[in-house]
Length: 157
Image (cartoon, rainbow, N blue to C red; front, top):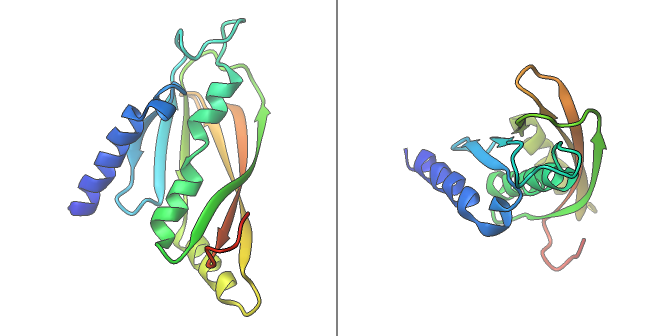
């Protein structure tokens, strides 16, 4: 119950935090265990570009923080997590509200822990992909994020 309340507070916090709010994106769901996050990005006067479609900067900014935040929350305080790299592939102009769903599986989290527990492995890079889709499931953009994970907080990305 407490985890669900915390997740709800984080959702509200994201939606009120000025840096995220200005992206135009809205967090619609955060799982209590932080292994799933959902967002929506409406087409409106704040997210519309010159030609009337979703601004590419809004598309990227709306999905930017989530894999890093999810890993920070699920791996715990013994791990250092930083965004390292991103790539956006625009596939179709966004002419309506787009949605994105971020997921981390138990297997992925265990793979990270196991790889970092290997002797000589101080840090790893993990790659995650999220699609921005319309209500029918048509992909309008794909964002690929590279996230740095380490157990040594003295190292830098």
